[in-house]
Length: 458
Length: 80
Image (cartoon, rainbow over all chains, first blue to last red; front, side, top):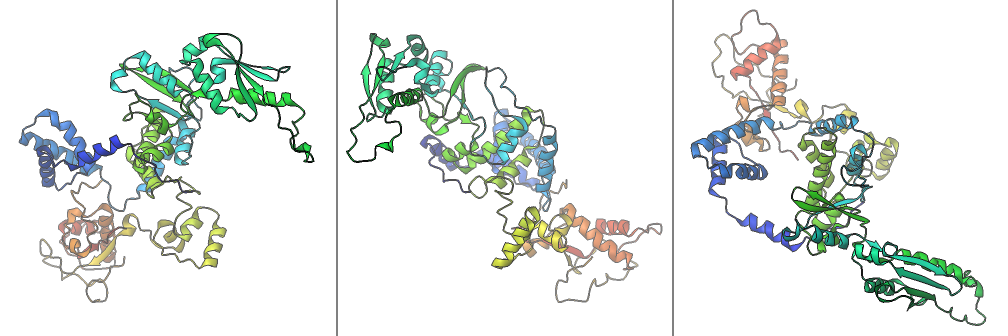
């Protein structure tokens, strides 16, 4: 299953990144690189950047900085993984074990009324399965700086985001004898939602099938004047044509009921997909939390801070910002899910999982439908699931297996290419002993004297 | 975790000639020690002076490894 390509990246973000990259390395940066080189360490860009940010304001003398760099270099070296370490297995264990301690329950969101968010193991499974839509999509919408602290302004934006349907602001009734649906605006509700009578009228006009209904104005006055939807006269059927085509033909009240149901679903305003929007004060600003998610459309709204607004739908992030953002989102979501349960998992394990899921340019699930099912080696796939089917298929199509992976080598009984199994020994008679041996004769030829570099078997 | 400051892995033969003993990864060290200990256990001449009480081939191999006299090194191929 391939996901479509990302649609676009908002212009503001794109330009920022290029600007940053064009900057020449600062004096501090080159010092950091220089001091790290003394310890034989090359910092990756991200670490260099974080190092820079943390050291910048300290105004250290070069000598002091050198000490700090040395300390970091030592820790960095200690934290590194040896080549041929089986990091995948370790990551699997490191996530799996804490996973056994996770609760299966879905908790209510602390502090916000009636906000249900999938957490814990179900959420982790959902992430790893690369589901397109989370079971509880949710957005965190931040507001631009100037309105951030103004509750009313934030409320206004929240109202723009939250979907308002006709039943939210009006009463819908049917009058069977007149074959009409009456929509009566409720002033109190309208005020709370910031809806005008004209808004209702517009959405009715846009959404009602005019071939079936005629829109009229009913009783009342001003903002509270009701709307009436009359059932249009059925077009006289052409003589001779089968009359039974529409079974409801003789029962107009059925159409009337259908019409009132239709009116109930009409959206007056809001971003589609967002059922609710709640405001919560966080530190010194108001933040909007939504039930339902539509990152693309919410980012378009004026007043929304596009730099911080986010969603828990990784797939939406992928669609709007691309695969790197999706990777970051996966890491963040998984890390938060584990963190909320009080479990500490080194972020590098989660990074590895996210890398594997995203390195082909789209989001792939862990498991049969994703990465395991797409392995190139037949034996590796056969080792995972439905062994016979994979082998049969491979036999029919004449597939070859170059025995590069771990599973393949275990199957054929060879050392695996991890750890000591990945090391190729070479006999080097030229290595001069540091202290020449006094009593012992020169080293024995390990094997028959092959041309230049016989491999040592042990 | 190996405190080695650099791993010149992935540069093929040219790099292999420059590997110092402290630059071996722990897997390489284990593999070399194992190969050498096997040779010693099968009666290969020793490359260092050893106390007469030292009879474990693995310990002798460790001693030799520490002295840097084992005529075995590793060939590193680029990881794909």
